[in-house]
Length: 180
Image 1 (tube, helix red, strand yellow):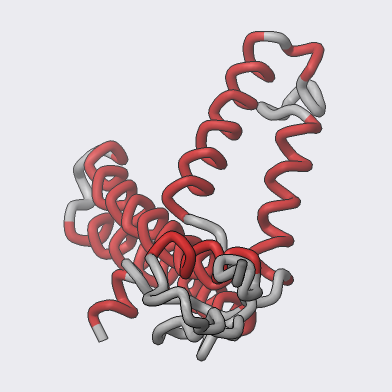
Image 2: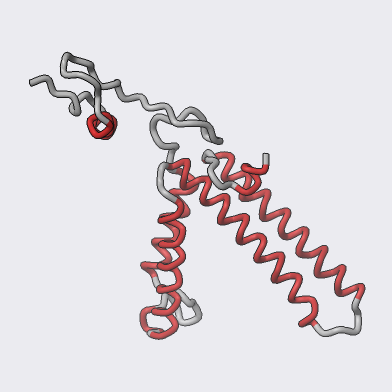
């Protein structure tokens, strides 16, 4: 159960990702308003700066939970989230720097992003929502992968080495075991 909450090695299908994202937004908005209005009512004579700290913590928790959901979905697609998510963040940061440093390249005059950055963001969002699960999966919410490629054929040459097995798995055939 904790693996699903933290999402370290689990995978999440399209529908589950969509519903979990909507549920996360609703829960986060509700908790943020409860915390903000609760603190405002309890400390009426303090500044708004005292209220923004806990609200920023709530937003940070939402971002971490959202990144975990995205990592589970990227893993389900078959992409490595350790590579995709930092690259996505780096592209968006570079996009922000380009749009603020060179305002002529910004999408609009009041927008802090460029059109290529917006298209990359849209493309990855569409991938999260619509790409199917990777081939050879047992389920969309975890479990082990079962390879559907045929096992390499045995012949009289002896035991199969690890490199021959890996080559056969990659090529999807018994190409690693050639009988000369």
